[in-house]
Image (cartoon, rainbow, N blue to C red; front, side):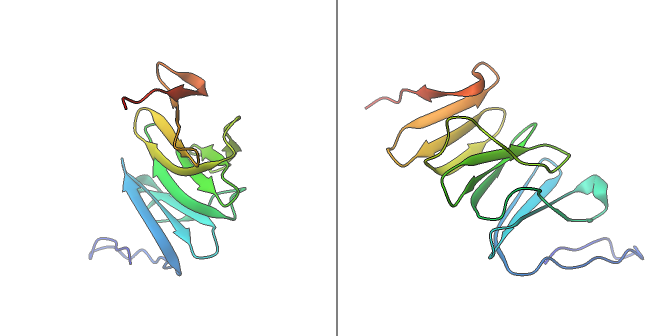
Length: 130
């Protein structure tokens, strides 16, 4: 459940059937059991809206400028304030996602691809020590 200040007259509709919840930087997003992603911000006064284009999310991460989700097909899709998801080219076998200033996807193969400041928009493989 989410809440609003006790002295507020504002009404809100609860988000039901949530399987995953992520909150960061004044923004919250949930994945519902049907795979739909719903997001809200502190400035939107608790008005939650569904992300356009995502119906099978498996994991989600909130970064500095965008929020990203891994879909059931392994694609990574990201969106900003407009809540309209756009796929990240070259990512179609992701199993996990992490975000901050930098965005990284863990692939089924165990490789890590990152993009963002210092990397550009195109994901690049990150070499990890063995």
